[in-house]
Amino acid sequence: MEAPHSSPAADAGTRLTLNSPSEMQELGRRIAKLLRPGDLVMLTGELGAGKTTLTRGLGEGLGVRGAVTSPTFVIARVHPSLVGGPALVHVDAYRLGGGLDEMEDLDLDVSLPESVVVVEWGEGKVEELSDDRLQVLIDRVVGETDDDRRVVTVTGIGPRWAGAGVESL
Image (cartoon, rainbow, N blue to C red; front, side, top):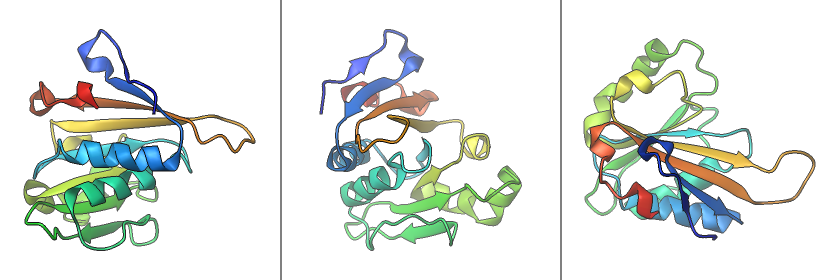
């Protein structure tokens, strides 16, 4: 993993270049150390960018039960903690078109205070769930390639993330 490249602007986020799926999973484990009950994590990236791989690392870092797989067909999966920490609620909002109304039907707002909620494809759909969120943007090399490199930008939004250690990822 290459050294993170931080931008001088506080809201620009921390940029990291990752070279493999295992590095993406390790980033998830490192992010998990920053998370606490009530946190909302939004993952943005095209199909195959590594959102579920990152979430798998989050699950490992949080010590939750069950294999973390894409919740595409069930929309949401809850992984209870095995270590007395917060549960991981993993949501795939790709097929949800109604934004906040449909997200509320999943009872995510009920789970949010005691869980870590990770939403794939949530941009423009779940921001109203919390004023504070961790936004993770994953960019991959485009075109027909086997290149596993990703540029990941992690940005803490809201007072919860001020001084939370995002810049040290």
